[in-house]
Image 1 (cartoon, rainbow, N blue to C red):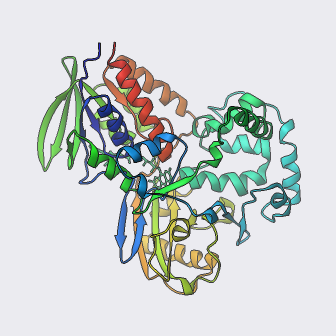
Image 2: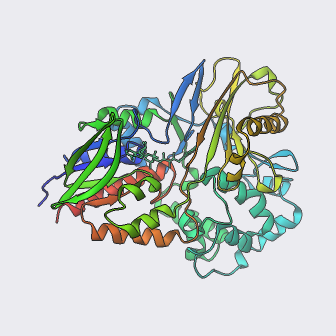
Image 3: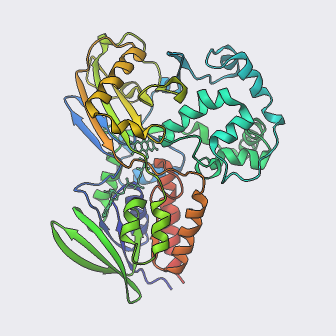
Length: 460
Ligand SMILES: Cc1cc2nc3c(=O)[nH]c(=O)nc-3n(C[C@H](O)[C@H](O)[C@H](O)COP(=O)(O)OP(=O)(O)OC[C@H]3O[C@@H](n4cnc5c(N)ncnc54)[C@H](O)[C@@H]3O)c2cc1C
């Protein structure tokens, strides 16, 4: 029997809101608690002086039809936009020069991004044997073994910082890049896996996940969570900081502070989507072991710099998504997205805009420097690499002190404990980007899985 119990969702980021959306469709009563005054969490969009600034995700990959489904159900399908075709081109810095990442076999043979020796080394990949355990193998170890050191240094190292702001030596290949590891597990290698996988997809009439389209919204990424929030029937308690969750009868008591006043509320079910480092404190009294697992998840700091320039001051074509910088190049930033090339409406007429990422798991120590000195050095290097001669007409910054959870080696032990915790505490669910993937697409996929878990649990 389904009794449609009342559920409290902690956090109005995309994970919490999307799960609430699915639950309401099944007639659950949902109440959301959110520390901030607005919906979105990591998705923050601002307008300033004709520039549209995304301080969190600049885009998402449409890896699931659920993204369009939600957009349609909350009435924003007509605001959804796809990236300009030019943004398929991505650059990598090597020896101070930007090289386009090759996307075809002839381009691969021609590129100066990889040496002839590295290209030959790639050919050996189909003959490299399988590894033992992907959970305890870093993505760096995996790639070095299969594809060689240079491919690690000039393709995977920058890619990993582009996705996770992560450190390739620390991220677990199976936990952080499960699809990549599956190619070895299932097919015995990456090249074999890609060929066989493509054949199998063709037979099933499916598209490759690598072909997933890059999307945003005409008024920026925050449109998504804000629009979901606006369509929810249940209340959203903004400015409500959850302090603690306690067991209460067959349900749970939430202790929270709203507008400086401590309050309590009781619910049958709780879904936590707040970051692991906050959940560790909130759920600490229920399970101290859980606290250890949540606290062990590292969220490195990332600074986002948004820059607007006069187009006339940029002395190179902005014909791509942007560029990533390998660790070996030893610069003070991870890369730059050419925001106004990718989507329309990001900069006003005659201007171009860029989003720069600094720090991450590769270089958290940078934030020990004086902030202005760091920004000055980043700007100097950015101008040199991008061939920009003048100062920006707009510069905005945001420091995410704990930006993105890292699925590092050992992550599997945390994941297993989260399952154990949920089994031992019926009605308490853990979600958010520290489970099931960090990308916007993964958060949406996971929201459906979480809603189904809650519904299934409540039907017993
Ligand atoms: C700088 C940056 C760039 C990114 N770029 C991309 C990208 O280009 N593409 C992509 O796919 N992904 C990107 N991501 C990742 C993606 O945006 C996030 O993983 C995703 O948005 C997380 O959603 P969430 O709901 O799980 O968590 P969050 O968005 O973190 O939401 C958690 C919510 O909980 C609230 N909260 C915290 N503590 C409390 C409390 N005590 N009480 C009540 N509420 C609380 C927070 O205020 C927040 O609203 C990026 C992330 C960052 C930080």
